[in-house]
Length: 170
Length: 355
Image (cartoon, rainbow over all chains, first blue to last red; front, side, top):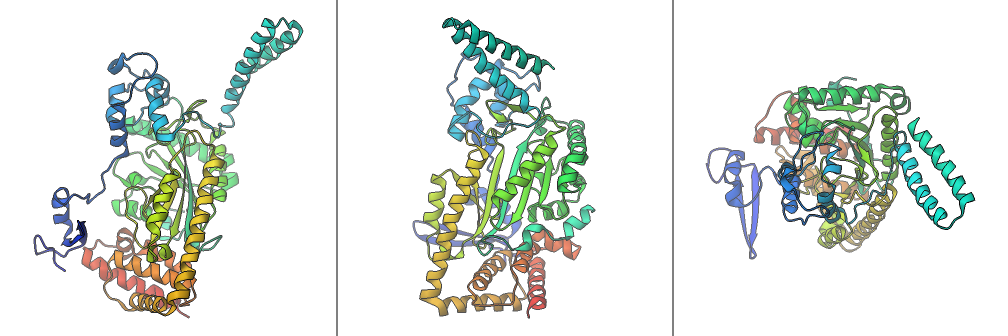
C-alpha cells in the first residue's frame, strides 16, 4: 500500500478514526504521518509528558504553611527554584523535598492519596531514623512523666534517652 | 559477558514457564533510588553523572551484591549505537527513556537479564528484577535484596516522611513500581476487556501497552502496574496487584473456557489460520504478526494446536520488533523490507521447532 498523502513512499502508519460512528481509515508513510500528526489529532511519537502534566497541576495548588515568598524560594543544594520545579515537574535533589515541603504536600496527596511514607527504611542509614523516632517518643513520655511527678520512672527514661543520644553521636 | 552477548542472547523472562505462564508473560519490580546530597540526573552534567556511575558501579562490584546475586556487567548505554539501545528496550532491559541520546547512562545487568540497574535514568538508580510468569513476590525479594546489598555502601536520598526521594513526585515513597504483563485474548474476543480495564483504574492500578508508558496494547498484551508509591507499604502494594491479577487470570480463564465450549470449531479455525499464516506468509507487519502470534498462543494453551513452545513465542515477541530485526540482519531496513524480513524470521522459527 502506498501513502495516501505523498503517493510515493509505502504506507506504514495506519490510523482509524471513529467520529460519531463514522469510520475512516488513513494510511500514511512515516514522514507524512509525522508531518500531519497534529492535524490528525494523534501523537506519532507519544510525547505526553507526565512532568508537564504535574507542572500544570502545580500551578493551581494552594500553598500550605508559610505564605509564599513564592518564586524566590530556591534549594540551597542544587539551586532549583520553585518556579523551575513548576516548569520541569521534577525536583532537583533530596534537599528540594525539605525546601518545597509545604508546596509538595497537596500535590503528593493528590497523586498518592496520602503523604507519609509507609514502606521500607534503608537498613544501614535508616538505623538512625529509627533511633530518632524512638527518641521523639521517649522525650514526649519524659515530659508527661515529669508533669505527673513520676520522677523515678522519668529518671529511667532520661537515662535511656542519653544512651540513645550517645548512640546517635557515635 | 560483553554488551554484545546481552544484545544477541536470550533473557530469563522469555523462558515462558512458571505460575500462570499461559496468561502471565512477565512480572517486574523496579525500585527508584537516588544518592544523598547530589542533584538528580536531569540537573547533572556529564561529569556529575560519571561520578554517580562510579559510585554505583563500585557498590555493585563490592562483596555483597556479587556474592548474593552474581557479577553484574556494566554497559555504557550512552556509547552504544542507537539500534543497540533500541534492542535493549525491545528486550525490556532498559526503558525507552533510558535509550534516548545523552551522556552518562549505563546499565548494570546480570547474565540472564533478570537483574538490572539503570544508572542515570530519571533517578540515579532504577533497580529492576524481571521474571517470567506470575512471580511478583520473587521479583520483589530479589530487587529488595539487591537494594539492601547496594545500601551497605551507598547513602540513599531518604527522609522519614517522604521515604525514598525521587526526581518525579509520582515515584516518591517506596519508589516501587510493580508490573505484570498479561495476555488476554479471551477477554478481548468476548468483549469484556473494556469493563475489566476500567475496573482496574478504580483500584489505583494503571494499564499500559507492551512497552509501557504511552504505548498501545497490541497482540492482546496488557501491562498492569501500581500507581501509588507513597503511603502504602511494599507488601501491601504487591498484595493488591497480585490479588487483582489473580482475578484477571480467573476471568480470562473462564472467557477461554466459554469460547471453547460455545465456539470450538470457529476458534480452532481461527487459530489454525493464524498458525498457517505465520508459517507461510512472506510479508508481515508487526501489528499483524503480534495479532496472529496472540491467536497461536491462545490455541496452544487450549490444545487446539501443538508443536510450538511458549518460549519460542516469547523470543519472537522481541525478535520481530524493528530494532531486533535490523540488529540480527546487521543492516538498516525500510519498513517494507522489515515486513519481508519479519515474515522470514517467523517462518524459520516456527518451522525448525515443529515436531
